[in-house]
Image (tube, rainbow, N blue to C red; front, side, top):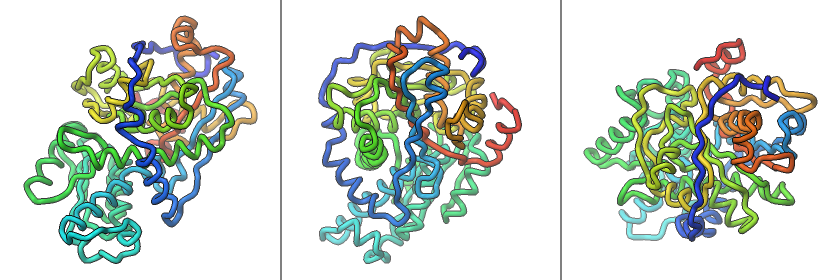
Length: 397
């Protein structure tokens, strides 16, 4: 077991959250219902695989590992396909209704009945890659102009993927949080509309829609499982994925919902530091992580409201674990299926394997031979060049 990944130190904060109603109030069952009803009607919709990894589970000493592989999602390579495009549709619906004073149906926008109005509504966002790609894809489908802001370290391959979907891509100096600020400022100056996966005071509808879209993924998972997992390891970032998945699991499983473990790069650990402080806390990113989708220094307040009440553990992992975990999924143990995973997808699995090699951390997390662990494989190969370098043996840390 200890030979599966390099030795590494994991940061750990354990919480005793005061359970409240945020998992039903911030994201209601009706929010998830609406997202599922719309997204499952889109051309190309199909549930993504929930992969069992029994040989790996035996090797690390847990009962079960289930890995939700989001690589095939709508041909876009990540779970973000469920969020950005759906939130864009909501922005278009609200703005057209505001301009016309009439009720607007999502299906009518999707069918092109408001194409002239949509063509005059520019949607913008900041991204590390996957959210922007989803937004660009949605804008292309619905006929809206799209501007995407990326920071200095976003790979050119990810930028080109968004251009290929018709987006205008603006690269800025600075990090992800700087690109968020630039997108907001230019949208305000030009009358454009931000479709962000992070919230701020007075801005909650699009990020709520983003998280509601992620519920489609969770409902697919729950339909395939006859009992709740004991643990779910969730990537951090601004917290949208972790919060959306957590709320949907709590609504489905109730008191039997799994123990929530949030995992972040040690180079971008804003949720970990928020847990330490007991309040949403921003961090300065001094060095970018290979886990590009998780390189976020400021939590989403909307997401934090849920995590503060539901998440029990926060872990940080070093970049040195990422490439070996990507290769382990591609060349699996025993008869486990091979999975092509991107760098951000493996954070939860890397943390799980590393935790099981540390007896005290395993005990602190309640991980033992009876643990049934759910992982969200949030992306497939979203940058073929980086994936090829990892598979060639580069550690990229």
